[in-house]
Length: 175
Image 1 (spheres, one colour):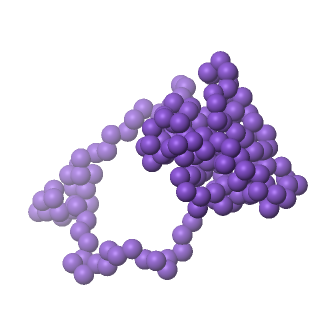
Image 2: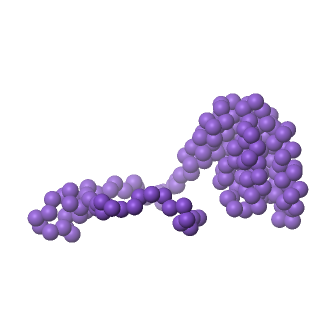
């Protein structure tokens, strides 16, 4: 059963652990937390994180969950990504954590997939302000007014030039 380590801005990691304890009526084994404070020494927290992984890691590894990509907790968690049988996910939320706890007996890569699915499927807009789903108009109805009268409905589908370069750019700036 994979161990789970939550590394997040204080007090978020502890709050997530407390929520799991509330949901399950007690804290499941092998769940650790590191709350990263604004005045922490990142090198000391990395050392603590490594010792926590050693303590929590089980036969199928460990999953590290952190809050926000690019922030200090995620940078600390990222140092654990090179440890064998450890996976690191950013953007932790309660649905992700619940899903991770439920599926931690599965192989580590399956656990990662389930946790990511829980994170995204657990986010919804609710309430009376929720807009009705918008159906996309058929292409012909959306494009016909802009087409010449003798054009066919299929003419409104844009086409790439035959010589379009579709290779992934490695030097393009990213997020």
